[in-house]
Image (cartoon, rainbow, N blue to C red; front, side, top):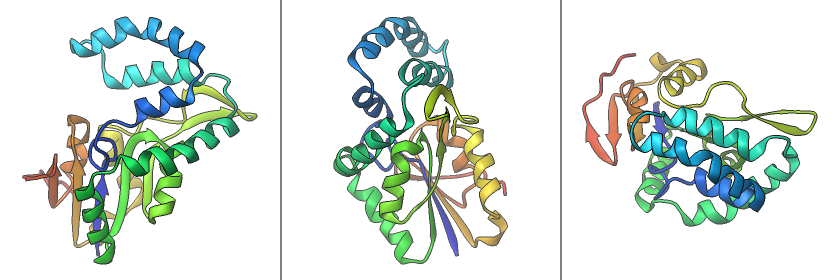
Length: 202
């Protein structure tokens, strides 16, 4: 059996969907306040002084502190059904379906949030490894539950979930440098849908 690992935003979808979900699921007052706080950080990110990990951590804190988890779950299901369904790359879904028809284990490995990725993956019969939000007593804390699923954390979680030596081959698909570590464990790596050489360190 083969294992197929897919990044989500920009790989399976035509664009980054997490920022869209945040915009749609956050109240207007929080959005305005958030834009003011984030402006210098975003400038720092564009100049290469601030990492995407830091930006996302701050965004989650501003967007979801003390938000009821039930409310966000409703937003996540609606986003998965309506927005994500209209944002998919045809070639990505063709490749996913080819892997499934070939009997391969197909996994979405994403820095995006399970709040909307879980219902989407369940609908399409895919395994999921991704970022989660921490909540207590029904309210979101504004923190990630554990590490963000990006960079080397993607590889760590894949190793934690699967015995890679049990697979005859490993496919990996990504579109940014945050996917490089995951591509390097593949026997067949695709960067922005172009086949590339991988380190194949297993």
